[in-house]
Length: 345
Picture 1 (cartoon, rainbow, N blue to C red):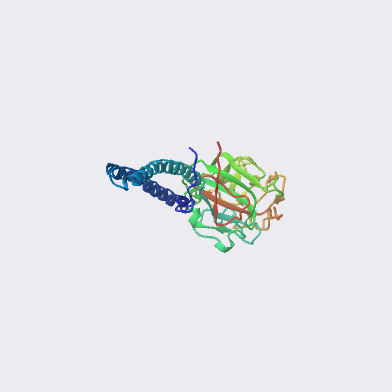
Picture 2 (spheres, rainbow, N blue to C red):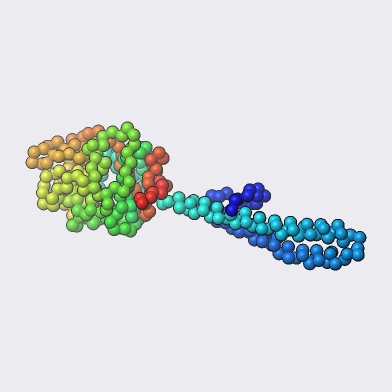
C-alpha cells in the first residue's frame, strides 16, 4: 500500500531518535482514528431518522447531506487507518534499524607511552591492584584504570595512536569470556596463555602510518598471548605470529609489551629490580647468544647494556568491550569510545 502524507498526524510524532515515544504516539493516533469507525455506526441511526420524516420541509436537503456525511465518514477511516498502519510498519523497520546500530562501547584500560619516564615492564602495573596516571593524561602518559581492568571482557582492542589520533588498531576475541584483564594478567603460573582465538577479527591501519614492519603488535599476525614466561624472562603481551621462546630457553628473544629479561615470570618478582625491565621492544631476531643490541621503542627501559633506545612508534592503548564492534577510525580516541557495529557474516 502506498503511504500518503498526513502532515497533521506527522506533526504529532516526536523525534525518531526516541523510538518508544514514536511507537506510543502512533498507537494513540491509530486508536483515535479507529473511533471514527464507531462514529459511522452512531451516525447511521440519525440518517434513518431524518429519512423517516419525509413529510417535513427539511428532510430532503438534510437527508442528502446526512447521506453524504455518512459516506465520507465511511471512506475516511478506511484510507486513514490504512495509511497509518503503513506508517506504523515503516517506523517499526526504522526503529529496528536504529536499535541494531546501538553498539557497545570500548573502555580504556591501559595506555603505554614508551618514553614518558615511567617503565611499564613485566613487573609494573599489570597484576597490581592500583591505578596508574590520571584521566586527563590517559592517552599521553602511562595509564591504568582499575575500574576497567577488573571488568569482565569478551573482546580486546590494541590501538597505536598519537595523543588519541589513531595509527592502527587490532580487535581480538577472548577464548574465555567474562574474565577481566586483572584476572588474566594475575594468571602467571604457569602463564604462557594464548588468550584470544581466531586472530585479529578486525584490523585497521591509517594511510601513511610508519614503522609497521617491526611493530610488536602490527608487524606480526596471530593471537594474543599473555604472561609469556621463558627461563628468567617474561612478556605481558606478545603475538603468536612472532618468535615465542620455549619455556626453558634463555635467549632474550621474545618481544612485545611489558617485558623483563631478569625476572621470575610466574611471580613477577625480580632481584635485578628494573635493570632489565623494558616497556616495548620491537620484533627482531636478537638471541642472547649472538646479539647484544635489543631494540626498544623510546627510552622507558632499565640500564641493562643490551637495551638500546629507539624511535617511538606511538602510544599503545588497550581497550576492552563486552560486544564486538569496530573502533571508529576517524574519531579521536578517549576513555570511552562508542563502537561501530560490525557484521562478520
